[in-house]
Amino acid sequence: MSTTDRATVTHNGPIAHVVLNRADKRNALDQAMLEAIADTIGQLSNARETRAVVLSGDGEAFCAGLDFMSFAAMLQNPDSVDFMARSHNDANLFQHASTGWRDLPMPIVTALHGVAFGGGFQIMLGADIRVAAPDTRFSIMEAKWGLVPDMGGMALMPALARQDIVRRLTYTAEIFDATQALEWGFVTEVADNPLARAMELAEQIAARSPDGTRASKQLISDTWGADRASTLMAESVAQKSVLGRENQTEAVMANFEKRPPNFKD
Image 1: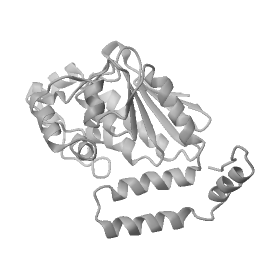
Image 2 (image 1 turned 90 degrees about the horizontal axis):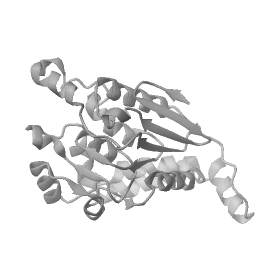
Image 3 (image 1 turned 120 degrees about the horizontal axis):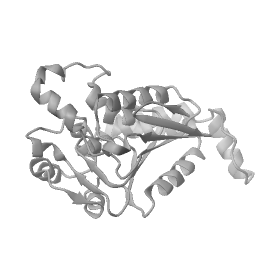
Image 4 (image 1 turned 180 degrees about the vertical axis):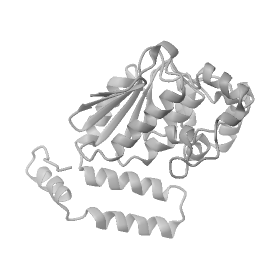
């Protein structure tokens, strides 16, 4: 287990469990939390032995959004934050806290409870799969403070929800529940125990060939919204990259021999 002041990472075989660790503030995002998230993403980017990640929040909420004291400090000195700096490839630190999960090679399953407001809402969008408790509340909260969503949400929401829904929620900052989030596409499924369900999904993912899973994640990311010809070519390239390799052959043999596969990371 690795620990920072704001996040913990526990490895259980091929599954890593990342916990936002600021329960007394409902895991609100201050500079230390953003840096902890970035550091965690950096650690996982090279974790070949990790086949799936579960992301959750400690305490009564997943993430309540930007820390109020941090927000107040920015209001007093707007130039103290360099939003234009591309510190993490094409993103700044705030954006990397959400888009960085999508850029990781292994699937991310997020367990949601309590609230996912503002920056917390955008962080959850970076996951591949989002499981929410029935009473979870959500909001694109930035309009309440006269701001725009600026943590990668606009890069991630178009693949999930209709444009008119995104516009409505962005303009109004209204709070909505898990049933609405599921209907609109922001949540994958609703479960009474989202963490247990997220772990179950992670175990299912981890039982598959890590080569095939990583190639599939990259394929989906590369082709979502792409033209037909580019998508068909990307499928062919991805399939060629895994066909006949050791883990793919092991998947076939395990099925034929009716035994659990023994994949190599």
